[in-house]
Length: 635
Ligand SMILES: [Ca+2]
Ligand SMILES: [Ca+2]
Ligand SMILES: [Ca+2]
Ligand SMILES: [Ca+2]
Image 1 (tube, rainbow, N blue to C red):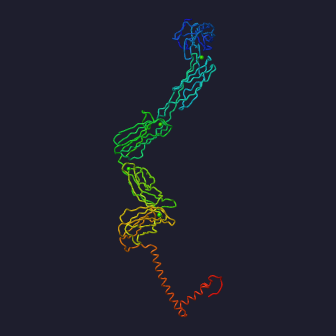
Image 2 (tube, protein in one colour):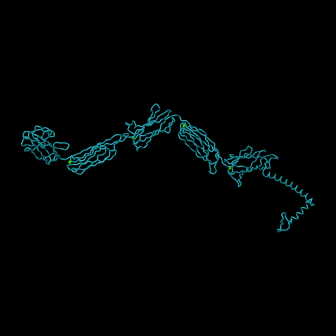
Image 3 (cartoon, protein in one colour):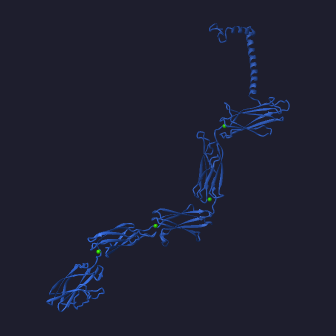
């Protein structure tokens, strides 16, 4: 080796140098050990007729110092001159850069008075790194969960088969591609979707991931690439909430139901906080959590609270769709309601029950009478009122419920009475609180055209006709009739302070008579009045369906004249007596007139009668024969 040194690090030449190196090339400049490399160089000088080329094939040690052990060749040429040198490295380069191991080649050219140099790099490697012919993009923006296909083209000069490992940076398992020999280049493809975990209630920002692709040729050669994945997290909407109670005025003892409602556009889990304020301080709070739901689904959280004392209270519901540290502003919505806590008051009935129609009439066609009962009720607290109707006819109770309002409410209920009669309608108005019931009554008269029973005969037979004796049997018969043949009840009062006797019958004969027979005896001689009270227990248009009949009974200790109850036969006898007297008187007048007429004709009545009898044996007074054929003489 020539004792020439130059520690400069470039191709620069001193302007005073006369020798010039035009070219220095190595072909190929990337070989494996044992593969020859051909060097070409040419140079010239302005002062000399010959040039000396000295080429060091391994000029520099890893620490940057000159390698005094470098193999070299020396060539002497004319001026200008060129050389072709061949060198075969038997081991990999002693220096290393990003492309592999290499040798630094240094060429000196000497023209007798000056020297110059030039460097060249020759990579001598056991194995070539794979390289991209088409690399991945440096960055990629995606949607949440969007599947994206990444493609790269890679070549390995050694023809190695490649293993590509994808690290996605999102905690999911790595993906691996295995290729065939890659001397001519291979495509590596991988599809992946990133689904970042989003903090509830947050949005309007990017989430990024670094995806790393690592390619190995199995011989120590590696190729890496990274891609930044960015995902835009959309705006997150705060929940929409409300809080309600059935009423805003409550009793201190009421267990008040508070209904919280919220829906979150993203269906996120929510934190619910009820805060109770008594106009002085927040004296109580309750916290609840609800899980994720479908987007915008409505979620309820209810609680109950007893306020215990009168006053004005505010209950505020706070609902947040995010984690505790972020529960502020729009992501902690509030909804207050005000409650007036005061002692509850009983309801009022503004007017008693009114009945429509005022005089209901049983409709025999329909089989009922439709009656509507109405009233006006009010609860000053706005309680819903329960009105319970008892229509007094044994049917089930009817119930009406008013809305929970403070306004006066007209409540009415219709009912069908299937039987005419008097009914006691009862109405109980309740606001659901002990001791607050209001009760009202109303009598309802449902009329019908049923007829009351009536008397056809009331006969009493005494032992002595017009009177009876003490201890003798008094036969009494009462004949009643009823158009509808309703069962008839009879009460007997025999006028002697004895117990009333009750009888009932529904036996009517074909003429409609229902007859009651009673045998009775009196112990004491006295005038008695028998009173009989009877009814068909119906309710008709005549309204009075009970009636009374009287009869006098005379009981005598001795035979005394007695008043007698004149019956039909008595009157008929009287008519016959007067009728007989009138006939005899009329006959006497007629015969007197006839006798005077016959005197004027010179004939006594007896002679005339004999003459008439003789004629009557032949002819009757109408000119017919009494027993023979028609014809004969006329008088
Ligand atoms: Ca390789
Ligand atoms: Ca939300
Ligand atoms: Ca009330
Ligand atoms: Ca009747």
